[in-house]
Length: 508
Image 1 (tube, rainbow, N blue to C red):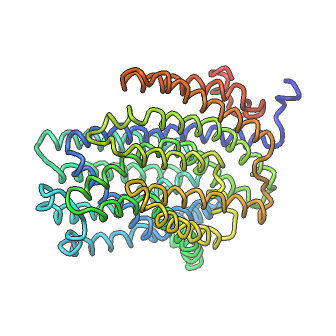
Image 2: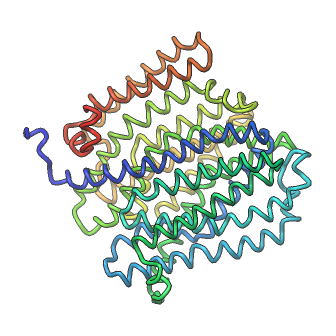
Image 3: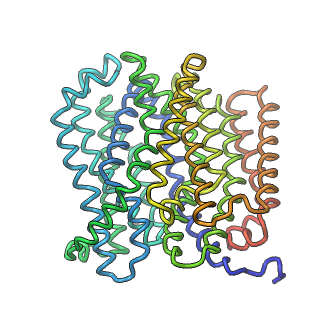
C-alpha cells in the first residue's frame, strides 16, 4: 500500500459513510421509479386529474411536515447518542406519539371540513363532483405518511441505511404504480389514483414499523414509559427545527398549490400538474444530496462529542462525490428535457420550469450536506433564521420575475430560496463550528465536473438533429460514461479507497 493510499485517521469514517451512502442511494432510486411512474399517471388519468392529485399530495406533505412536530429531525439528534436499550425505546416511543397522534387528529378534522375545503381547490369539471370524497379519503394519508416518516427516520438514526431499499423502492413506488393501473382498469378516475396512493402508504407504514422492530423492539417501545424529560427533549429538539422544516416544504409543496390557485378550474389543475412534473424530474439530482444528508446527519450527531476532523473529512468527501455526480446529472436532465417531457401527456410547457429547478438542485447538491450537519451539531435557531431569510429572498424574486416570466416565476422564487438556505448554512458552519468549506482539491474537482457538463452539452447539441428518443438515449450514455471518467480522474486516492468494493469493480 503506497503512502498515497494509506488510510488516514478519517478513512474508517469515510468508508462507513460510503457504505451507508450506497445503501441509501439504492433506496433513493425509489425517486427514479417515482419519476418514471409519473408519465403513466398522466396518460392513464389525464394531466388535470394528475395535477389535482399532486395538489392534494402536496397538502398532505406539508401538513405532515408540520404536525409531526419535527420528530423526524429530532430523532437524528437524540437517538444516536443513547446506548441503553430502554432509553432508545423511550426515544422511539416519544417520537411515535408526538409524530403520529397530531396527524390523526388533523385527518379527522379535514375529513369533517371537506365540504368547505373543496371550493378552494381548482379542478377540472369532471373531477369536481368527487372532490369532497377525495379530500375525505386522502386526509388519512396524513397518519400513514407520518408513520412512514417517523419509522424510517428512527431506522436511519440507528445507522441502518440499507433497509430502506426494499421499503422505498418496492412498497412506496412499485406498489403504488401497480395499484393505480388496476384501479384504472376498473374504471376509477381521481378516486382510483388516490386509493392507489393510500394502498401503498398502508403497506409502507406496516413495513416501516417492522423495520423499527428490527433495531428497537416494539415490545419494549410499547412497554417502556418515556420520562417527562425525554418527551421534553424530543419536543424541544423537534420544535426547534420545525419552522425550518416547514419553510423547506414551502419551497417545494406550496409552489404546486400556488400554481393551482393562480388559474381557475382545469387550467389551475393543469398548471399544478406541469409544475409537479418539472419538480419530479428535477428531484433526481437530490438523490445525491439526500443520500449524504441521511448518512452524515446521524454520523455527525454521534461524533459531536468527538473531534471535528472526522466531520471535516466526511464533509469534504461528500462534496467531491456530489460535484462529480450531481452537476453532470443536472446537465443531462436539462439537455434531455424535451425528450423527458415528451414522455408525459401535454407536458411540453414545463421545460423552463424544469431548467430553473434543476439548476438550483445542482447548486444544492454540489455544496454538500451542510444543512443536514447544521441541524444535528449547530445551534437550533439558525435553520429557522436561514429559512426566513430565504423566504424573504423568494418573495422578492417572485415579485421581480412575475411580470417578465409569469409561467416560470414560481420556479425562480423557489430556486432562489433553496440556494440561499444552503449558502447560509455553509457560512455559519464555517464561522461557528470550525468546519472549513471548499478545501483543496475542491477547485480541481469543480473544474472537472464543469468540463463533464460541457461535454454532455456538446453531445446533446450534436444529437439534437435526431429524434427525441435518440436524443434521450445519447444523453443517458454520455451521462454514464462521463460520470465514470469524472470519478476516475476527479476523486482522490483516499476517496477511491473509501468506496471499497464498488470502487474496485468500477476500476476507479
